[in-house]
Image (cartoon, rainbow, N blue to C red; front, side, top):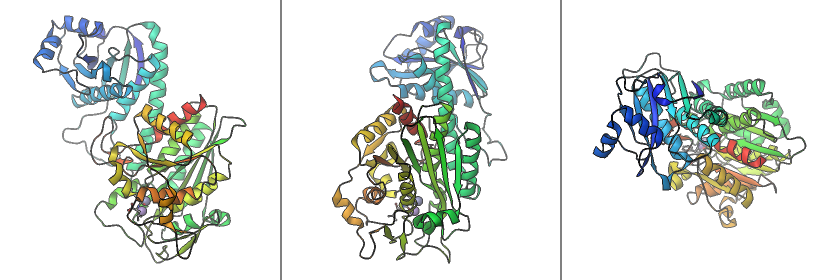
Length: 496
Ligand code: BES
Ligand code: MN
Ligand code: ZN
């Protein structure tokens, strides 16, 4: 899909659909008023009758029949000005784009009015809202849905003033780049585990490396063994698919300390010998959502030419039961030298992260952020509204929180107090890999905290946000790409 910015008047655009935005509780802005005048006042009339609404995220469609050049007019509500956020703009643009697609339009134009944000920010939000809302995963469909309509091919953002084009276009470009990376993450997460093995993930990393001139290294089992990655190898022991430890480096920051991004990349989580119930197990193809997010973020750092050094680390493996699989009661020796007693082979994410975090410490990083579909307990605690956040550094937590507010991928902090960490004491090893039912999000993070040394670190649990069962604003149900935009924003803000 191509998104461009052009100067001009909306009434004159020969498009299959044009979009105007309106604010609740205000009279029509000058542009909408002009369009309404051309329509003979229909918009006003329908608004008064309640057939059109300016409520946030509500869209209506009118057929101008020659009174303006476009075939359809989509009126998108932004809600009240006092409650206006940049996210409302993403929502309105997304709803309008989906309505246009449902009506069969291939080319649409959006006019800018109503929202009171900077031009760049506005362009970015429009591009993100449209791209993210229109996402569909159709790779495995051989026939069109019965009522399926084709994709939207082009979106034109109309700038009333020619002087606005440049800043808008810059925002649109960045928005599309960032949304596209989230789309790539969604595609990776949506793909069946058979087609998204550790080897496939490594291939995608290599492809991004070529495109963005990143240094990509893929460690094989023998190299993991040399490094002493007993935890990652333990989880991989039951799988026929060889594990990969994927390292993607972007060097744009000269001598600055590294920012390490670590993403859980379990390409399928059956639970292993502590096997999961069949119900919902298919969703466990999404257990690599953290890895997809960090891969997108490091690629964006390069594409945006951020003056930073960023390394993304993806410990990638399946978690499978077999004769050679890890067993409850086993003790694994991690790369850090610490040992972990396995109580439940389904608590595998923290194991692979333990080795990846230890590897991150080799970079002497300025900060470490890990992101992982780690615990069902996080779904119980927070649901899909927010990712769980835990860490050892207030400043870093604040930076991550702020980035999440900007992108509307919110995080909510949970405490990492010593008392919780007592719950993973083992009788025979340095720690055990589960802490019982109480505080499951936290005890998982407690284990991770033992592998980050003294480096500032934040952990994000995206078990409930990486995959959703119901549509959310500009996020169709299924894979969300959660974290990709957040981490990109975090990196962008880090520069400032
Ligand atoms: N990948 C799962 C967590 C998960 C559950 C993600 C549901 C997305 C949706 C993780 O590896 C897991 O199995 N965690 C266990 C830990 C338990 C055994 C301590 C869990 O949450 O049940
Ligand atoms: Mn598991
Ligand atoms: Zn898992």
